[in-house]
Image (cartoon, rainbow, N blue to C red; front, side):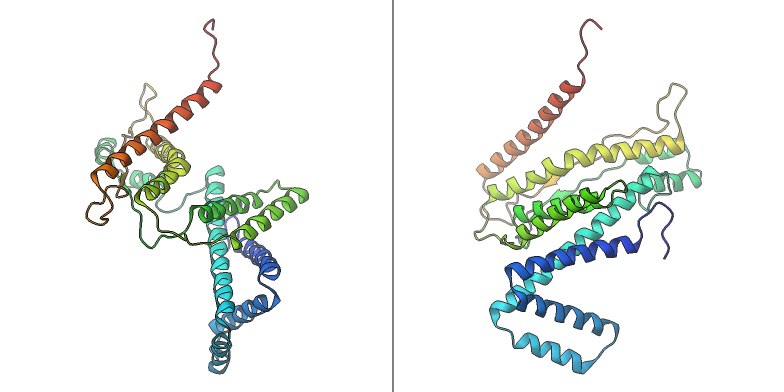
Length: 311
């Protein structure tokens, strides 16, 4: 399918996946050895061909190859494929993120489910302002954090994947020069190498307080940025399609409708280590984290609003 003008195409995505695969291959060659890299490539090509056309004899050969591998080699091969698919996921997320930003910057029709698209559809259905305001007033969105027992990935691994995501996003910049691209690719190679040499799973079971700290990581790193943007996008969509009153105030006002919950540190039924003291400590840490973030933003604002009392 052809992409609209100004949007990245599938060719861009495939090129980035190839780059990530090449860099991972270099890391495998250096730290796992040529034998492991050859096994990975043989299996990758072989099963890709089987996906296109079934060949029972070829499938049997590939399975026999796996069965004959020593356990240590199997572990490295599995880890290599796991690393590859994580990188592919990052590339796909970066691709979608960059295209959405381009859609916004070029004033294009946004994706289904976006605030702009949804409000535009309501306007096209001639929904009155009063009806929409009543509906908006009833909005309530409350995502809940949980320390899922299967989520054993270390924070260091997740932070590394986030850095790779940001580098991939920069590589899509239309103003990127040759030297800048080489520098970013070098950074990408370094991050992939660090990821390969970092244990993905924790060696010790987390305590409840550790789970709380991990949950607060997302509050600090994403929610304080994402929530204001969500309100801003919603307000802009309402102003765009429903306009403003004579006094310049939006015809439809957005109330505070996003709330957050958390099972972490408060799940008395699911975790026997959650005590009253732990829950009290958790609430205190959550309050402290929120206040610290607000204080940080006030200090940033102080550096921006440098008005003199004389003016």
